[in-house]
Image (cartoon, rainbow, N blue to C red):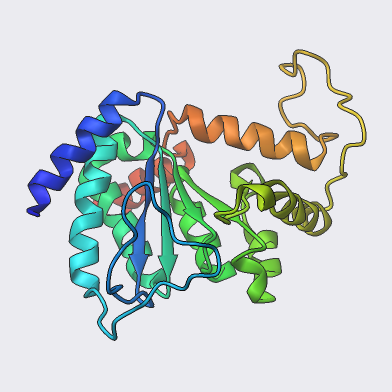
Length: 247
C-alpha cells in the first residue's frame, strides 16, 4: 500500500472519531516482521505466540511513516501515543525535527512516550525542551528493568501518566494500580483513601496536598486538552543570545 493511501485512510478514521488520539505509533529497533497477522475480529489466543521472521523493518522506513503520521496529527490537532524501543536517540531527533518543522502547531498537541524505556537523562533533556511531551509507564513493560524508578524520579511531575499496557481487559485495572503505587512511592505522593477534594480546584493551582490519583487525573486532563505553548524563558534566552552575537 502506498504511504499516501494509508495516510488518507488514517485521516478518514480520525475524522470519523473526533476525540480519538493517534496511536499507537512509534519507532522500534527490536521488532521483527511476523509471518502473518490474525484476521480482523479473530485475535489469537493469549497463549498463542505470534510467529516471527528474522527480518526487521529498517529504521529509515519507520521514521518516514512516523513523520507522515505525526504531520497528520499536527494538521488535525490530535494527541499522540508513541513508543520508542531501543531508539531513544532517533526519537529525540524526530521530536526536535517536528518542532523545527511545525513550531507552535507541534507544541500545541500532546505527545505521550508510552511505556517508554528511555534513560532518565534523556527524559529530562526532552521534557526540558519540549513542553508537550509526556511520559507514561507500566509495570508490564517498564518494571522489567530497575531503571524505571530513576525514570519516574526524573519525569516532570505534571507530565507523568500511568497505564497497564496489557491486552487482557481483566488485568488492566490491577496493572495500572501497580504502577500508580510505584509512582506514589518514588514521587512521595500520598495515596488517597477518600476523595477529599472540593468540586472546584481553581484556588489550589499547585496542588501541593494532592495525592497520586488526583495528580495523575489532572495530568491526563491536561494531556487530552493540549494547547501547550513554548516556555517564555526559553524564548527570552534565545533573543538574548541573538543580541549578544550582534554586539
